[in-house]
Image (cartoon, rainbow, N blue to C red; front, side, top):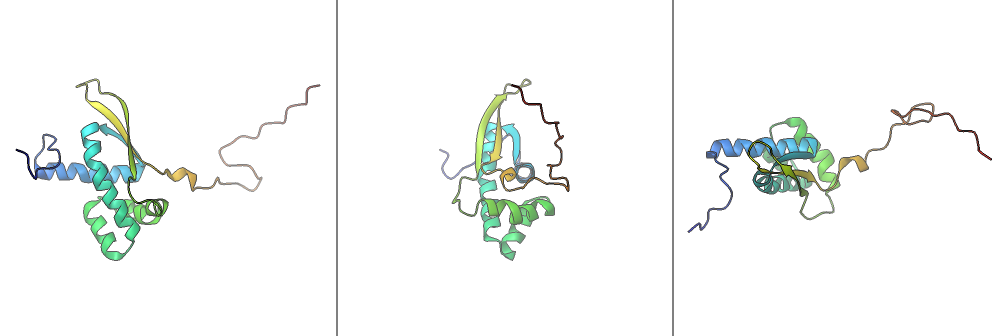
Length: 146
């Protein structure tokens, strides 16, 4: 019987498995979308939700706890400043898993795990002095056809 044995082993020992989870959560919070196997994504989902909940708390002990798990100070600062603010009104379910393909080498089911609320909606387009958005070309106006 498997009583009190939650979680997947993923063919790794405990230290390797914990390092894998830490790096996957760090990458997910940094890039906001990663592609991995279905089993790894389902395991990482819970760790990511806990880190975002810590970011929503926002106090110093929560920041230190997040720093002890995540691998990058820059990701922790992004978590506490940007990501946690986007999920302020949400009470859980911060990630979604989307099935994408089967890997060619071993036919493993690949999925994309991403944050539910994307960061692109909060950023405003940068406008230069001429009044046009940066990165877009001005096109000459077409003559009216009659």
